[in-house]
Image (cartoon, rainbow, N blue to C red; front, side, top):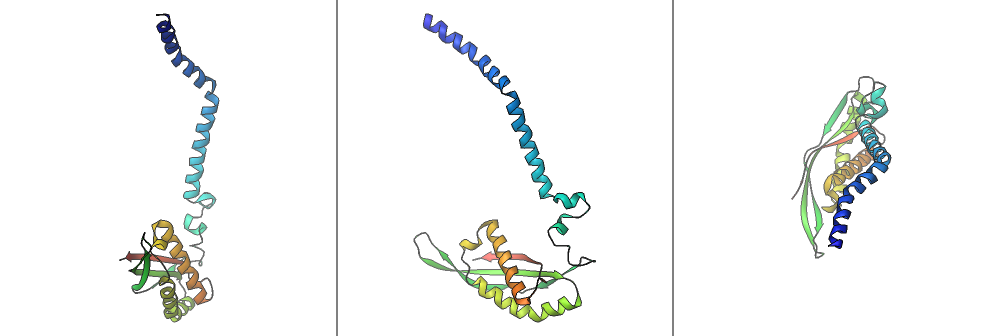
Length: 178
């Protein structure tokens, strides 16, 4: 019976001890919460435009999309569907043939010179895209990071063909792996 009385006393004191511990560490808990709130606010601030939004610019201009000229107008060079064969490696190590169908457009600043240059270079850009896409695997295209890498590589190749930074962005409207 004495043991039972001691156990009941320990159980009765346990919640008070927990509250005392929380009360003693209240400043630490509040500082951690405040730090979490500040981190979320900073993340939202950066995601929605950062400093340029405060000084009157837009998020697109801070990313370099609006730096094409005073008017800021962009033109599109549309490519027909590009269909290439790619490979997929199965878990057992065997290769399987897959097909990639891609419909994309190339964004560039609107001007008569740029339009003539892009129209002249379109077949060469398409050929470069096709050669690169044939080297892709299904694993290269997985997830959103795969799409981001694909767009970056295509843009890099388009700029290499044109010879300058006239192409500013790649827009992918359809991407199908079959």
